[in-house]
Amino acid sequence: SPLPSPKDQSIHIDPRSAQMDESLGEFIDIFNRPDDSMITVKKQKDFTMAKIIEDNNPVVLIRGRDTLDFPCEVMFEVLHNIEKRKEWDTVLQELHVVQKIDDSTDVIYNSVKGVMGASPRDFLQMRKYYQDCRGFDYIIVNKSCELEEKPPIKKNVRANCIIGGYLLKKVDQNKTMLGMIMQVDINGYVPKYFVNKFAPGKAIDWFKQFKKYLTAVHK
Image: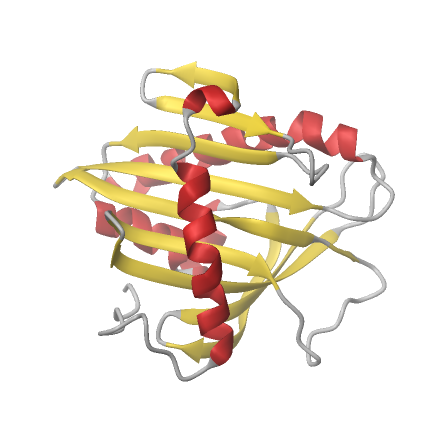
């Protein structure tokens, strides 16, 4: 079940959780950017996928949005619960919680297969969720972090999640708006232009996979 929402998410004992709060405004601003400020990759009914490469960062920033016929709480559970995520997110080879920081914040590790001869990638990310925050029912924000007890390993390239996560807003009892933001530098020797070209398509596939799982399990 979803983690309990902290009574006051503006007060934190652990400064690492507070650091995530500093990214929250940026995260919401990205989601609220005007559509004409980004390049539309795909638009179909309620679904929109857009991208932008900014002058100060060569890594593509991706924003997706869709409205799905599932309850908000169910969608949050499927996104946030690690065991459920393993059931449907087949891109992931490994996924687990490394460290729990507070009721809404943890550090997670995941790895993905290498493609087209590239080395496997792994991620170590700080993850924090917010409930009933700034007009959204749930927000999940991810950013890469470092921990001495989870250093990079030789067989993988440690990728960098510059910013990423999800926004959920209830439309009605059985319909929810889902937003997704992703900006990931996979590091290593894969050219940025190659990653930037194919990343939006991978994000579109992610939405399809998420919806397929929800349809199979919750309809």
